[in-house]
Every structure is written in structure tokens, then in C-alpha cells.
Length: 140
Length: 140
DNA sequence: TCCTAAAAAGACCTAAATAGTCTACTTATG
DNA sequence: CATAAGTAGACTATTTAGGTCTTTTTAGGA
Ligand code: SF4
Ligand code: SF4
Image 1 (tube, protein in one colour):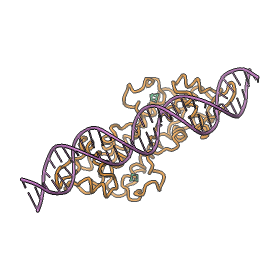
Image 2 (cartoon, helix red, strand yellow; image 1 turned 135 degrees about the vertical axis):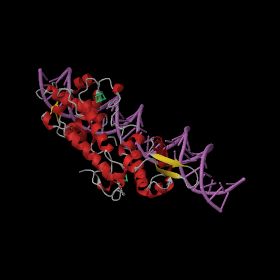
Image 3 (tube, chains in turn yellow, red, brown, purple; image 1 turned 90 degrees about the vertical axis):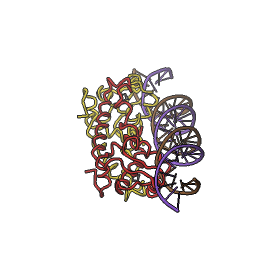
Image 4 (tube, chains in turn yellow, green, cyan, red; image 1 turned 120 degrees about the horizontal axis):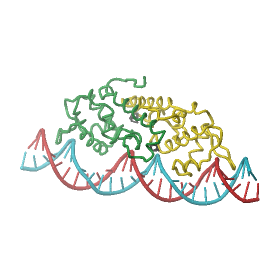
């Protein structure tokens, strides 16, 4: 139950690079994999859920590749994490109601739920356009 | 690299129970394990780092047990997570400077660093006393 | 003084999730 | 019609989390 795995890290790097290069031409994964030093076969596996989530659009055949399906301003980091991790909570019991029998009486559950909310709000507030832009300090 | 594992979840439940019962008498882990339905041997392994972190104080022998080493108001959830997980970041590359060779040029690193900060600030803002108190909605 | 209840320490094992690879197939362009 | 690209799913390897076992040490109380 790790929220940010290499899937999100690799995937976001892919998308930021696509955002930087613009939506005009399709870009093949092989070139991204080489530049970003990510195993191409692994990266190609990340493309599928990103496409399913409506974040990427693919073009097959020679001169094919990927491009963003929406404008970088309209894709949030939360979208990416949810697409690649299949969830956006740090824990099993937050979100899914019946995941834990103690959830009714649990005094710590509200803490974890609140944590999830804080994380999601933060990730929702950053778009690919933000990330592609020059060094922004998100910690402020 | 999961930030909140069962270690933190179990450990926090232990500490909240101790906070609720007050610091007057030492409480043995077996009874906590039974009430909280946590494997006692596993719980005992969590006590060691909590003691090392100055969160718990132990008393051996018959009638021994554990009690909080500080007042519940002075123990934050962040203290607990750091003691039990040995870290407070979601990723390897945030925090440790040399963890990734790309960190200098990486456009996504600031996003993850910011996420870490948001998480830590949130966890630092909740004390055991808060958690032990009646149903508080931390999501507001 | 001995018995007992409890912490302490550390080796050990298992299961699950993550990370990565391989292969065979499909599609579109030039 | 060759080629560069995406698609799909099985497969393997590695790491980490979760849990157990065994032995030792300590202190209280009958
Ligand atoms: S006991 Fe509480 S924190 Fe643990 S899984 Fe259940 S609801 Fe979540
Ligand atoms: S590439 Fe960026 S996000 Fe990935 S590990 Fe390196 S610094 Fe962190």
C-alpha cells in the first residue's frame, strides 16, 4: 500500500516531458525512455492506464507515439497518481467503508482520513503545466 | 517505501489507549493486544523503537508494563510515525540529497518534496491528546 | 527465596506487493 | 509490404511488510 511508487514517479516524468514538448506532435516512448533513463518496456506498461484515464492519446504505426489527451493545465498530479496507482489513499481503511471492522470505534481512523484528504488536496492543486514550468517551489 | 504501515497504525492505537488510561499506572502490552486485537509479539516489537524515541517508558517485572514518557499533548503523530517507520518521507529522493542522480534537473522532485512537507505538517499538528479526545473530524 | 509476570532482544519465516522482462500480436504509415 | 510503433498478458525477480519463535533479563510478591 505505497501511494507513490515508481509507477507514479516514472509516469509523471513521462507526462511532464510530453507537456514540455507540446501537443503538436506524437512522441514515441522509446525516445522518452532513453532520455529519462526508464526501462522502455516498463514505461509502455504505464501508458495503458494513462490512456484509459483519458490522460494520454496514442497513435500507432510509423511516426506514431503518444501525446497528451488534454491540455496540461487540465491534468492534475492527482489524476496521474489515481490512474497509475489505482487509488489515492494511503490506507485500506480510509475510503472503503467496510475495510475494517473496527472503523466505527477507531479513534485513529479520522487522523488517517484527514491525512488522505490533505494529500489529495495537495496533488489536485498541481497541474502538468505547473510541473513543466521552471523550478517552482511547491513547499512554500 | 510505504509511509503508513501497520507499524504506525498499530503503534498509534497502542499510544492512544495509553493516553486514554492516563500516565498513573503502567499497562502491560498483553492487555492492550487483547483489547485492540493486535498480535502481542508484534506489538512488543513496536515498543522498542517507541521507547528509544522517548515516547514510551517501560517497567519490567511483575506489575510492570508501559506508560507514556511524556504528556499526551507533547507527543505528535509525526513523532510516532518517525519512530516506527524510521522516516517521514514518502520517497527515497526527498530528504536524502544524493539518493538520485537526476535530482538536480528533476522537475517532479519539487512536487514530491512539497507533498512530504504537507504530510509532515499535518501529522505534526495532531497530538495524542487530540487523538484520545472524542471524535474529532480532522478533515475539516 | 523462589515463583511468576512482564519486558527485551534478535533470529527467523512467510506472504504480498513492487519492479522489471519476455514474447507474440496488431496496427498504421511511408 | 517492410517497418516502427502500440497492445496484451504471462512470467520472473526483488524487496518489504507482517508475523512468529525462542531465550534472556528483570522485578514484585507469596
Ligand atoms: S483499526 Fe482503525 S486505523 Fe486500523 S485499519 Fe481499522 S479503522 Fe483503520
Ligand atoms: S527522477 Fe526525480 S522523482 Fe525520480 S527519484 Fe530522481 S529526483 Fe526523485
